[in-house]
Image 1 (tube, one colour):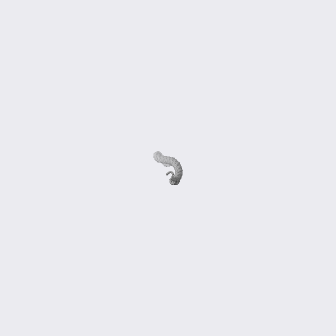
Image 2: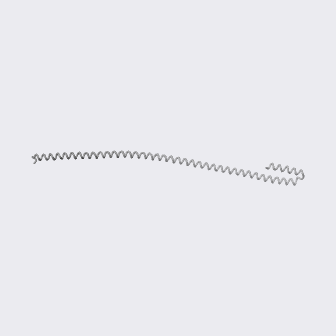
Image 3: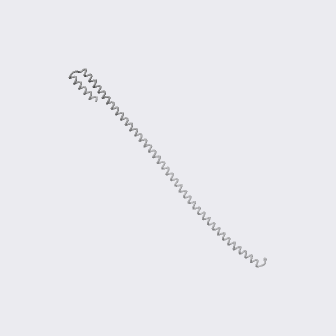
Length: 161
């Protein structure tokens, strides 16, 4: 059998088809592996791009957060300053109000005191006039006495009022 040419043709034919099939399968397998390798490389590139985009978005959001915190701090600072200004203004207004009220009260007291002094003087003048009239009527008589009484009353009234 090893001596027959048919056998060696058959062996050569089987080897030839084995090589053809192996080469074809190998090419198909290599093409499949190349395609898969390309797909994996594309997926890795896409994943790298997505990661870079995600990092950019994260950096943007972190910057926005920092900006928002700065703005919030600024708003709080302005609000505190405004509150302090309003408190100071309210304190000043209340102090001015108290000072105005105190001055008004002092003015009213001074007016009441002046009025009381005037009333006391008027009452004293009336009492003095009555007393002078009484004394003069009893001690000075006649026409000359009446003139003196009248003159004295005028002087007392003019000095007391």
